[in-house]
Length: 308
Length: 298
Image (tube, rainbow over all chains, first blue to last red; front, side, top):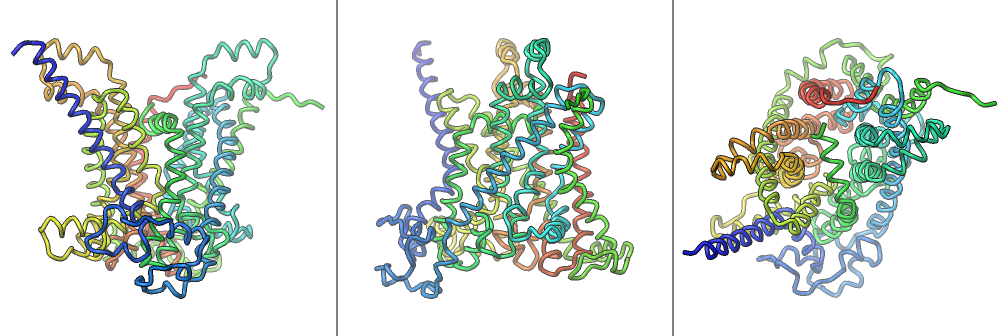
């Protein structure tokens, strides 16, 4: 065998291996989601067919319409064969998934914005200003984030009750800001500390005050760091379940997506097309956010847990 | 009037808002949970007017069989998931690292997806996949001819435990892979070249070059994941509700049930303090590894 021949063969084997690896990883990561997507497009009741269809022969958006409260289940549903328990007594009020989505969007974006505001100031002080307890301050802020949620949940509930905030969105927004400050401050402090000092010195010569330096020099240079801290706060508070399940106290108007989806799965536990549609709706948005900000998510994850 | 603050004072002013949030919603509740754990609190948290019971809540916790079960499950879950995640993640990281850079971009994007899904939603997702009749695993087992009737994945104790582990591995292995990929990328290329020139085979290179250089990253990643796995809540709560019986109750779901199902805040708090002690032990190692390399210009 000639050398060129061998090289070419190795090239082909390598290429095949790469495609195989790619395929395996994609199947592993997206396979479960594909199955749920397929279920969500099946007509009601046909998710129990045996053998199950890999992809529905008659895909329909029925489940999505029901989940989003656009159509009433059972009424304009021509597939008469589907007499699944509970389908008749369904009240439309509990099914409007749009309300939880709106609530979650409000909670997650307020948390992201407030977290960025509070922790970028703290991170600036820690990384760029002169004072004595820098590392100790950062540690105090950061270690709080390692506390398990169950440690703080009962007293937080009591605090929210005495503030009269139960069953309102701020009862989720305020604690979630605190839960996201540790990581955000950590990421931003590391990010700010890597910025060049020359610009800041120049700004000082021009007579800028620290707050002006922060606003006009540091923040504009830190977009990637701010992105990753913001995305983490957004994703974290969007998915937060334990606190939300407690402070919303079963009131549908203030429920966020994680709470609503669990309630849905209790109330209509045989309607897996609906639950699947709800899963896809609540996952879709987050996956989109994660994919758009993928680069910063990865940078942030690496800096937030292993890089030092 | 214009107030001029010197830099240290200004720094403190900048940090205070963050401190207020963290103290109010993390450290202060932690302290309160600590206090609660010494009182008999049933349907109330007014510990000033309730009987002080000393350590008897803790005694009750340590005596109960349910605690032992949930403790052992949490420990088993943590060890098995983290080991499996490490193996899979390492495999993914190495395989992805050698792939052509265009494919690598797609792969990294795909690997972020399971992590971005809210935990309780992924619990719902896996509950459907493990459905006893219509789930995909039941179908695969049946059609492969291994069994006639698929086993009830989430209601058989052993199967429920491992179903939850699989769900957790799916959610976290790929993100572990991404973290390790970061570690791989930071290994200088000439180290490999040198090993190649010396005629080291692939497997040898991996064992003697890659692994030792990757070890610090692996250690911190594993500690980081263990910290999260020890407090696992949503997967158990969403997939099995702790069942069957209490076989898949973690320490977190147990404390949660004591609080909000039985309204026994005293015992629940002592549960939480036990979790705290365990997490603290791991956290100290983790923090000390990360802290030592932190430097800021004074």
